[in-house]
Length: 147
Image (cartoon, rainbow, N blue to C red; front, side, top):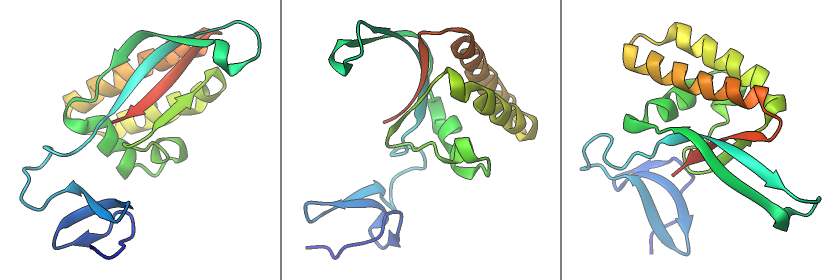
């Protein structure tokens, strides 16, 4: 049995993500090539259809998405000091509504101005486009889907 470790702690076994039922789950084994075990955050624009107020009648359909190839967006979020981007978790899904879009767009714009590469800027521009569509639509949500 491996002793409990804090989330994100480093050991000779690699970087741990969490302890689950007494087994150590490795996020990045030390001998794995960089990026082979990393998990990105896909940005998905979802249309919400809901009859009534009950959550069981809520139906989601994907409108468009920006996949996080190479984990660019996940790494930008992890390294960000901006509050909304910093709360994005590559292992969970965060749902943003129309009310969140003003702050999200401003943080994406601020990050866009700081990144050096065209790949990162293009990805952020595509994400911003989805956020603008979400802000304009009443029945749209932006899902930041961790793997």
